[in-house]
Length: 63
Image (tube, rainbow, N blue to C red; front, top):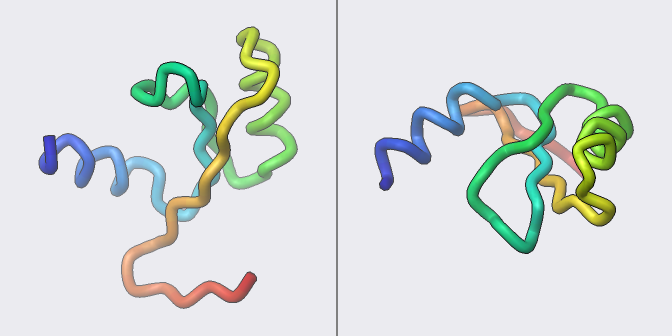
């Protein structure tokens, strides 16, 4: 499971990812623009997607 998480993290570094909080296992949308990621998730029928940002390794972010 840890190896799968590491691969997923590398794939989505520097992007927002959305998933259905009821299912929690599948990324349903991703991208650099959070609004577009939410729109794509809603287009797939998920009204309230959970969205997180996956930081790039070694980068510092301020929110």
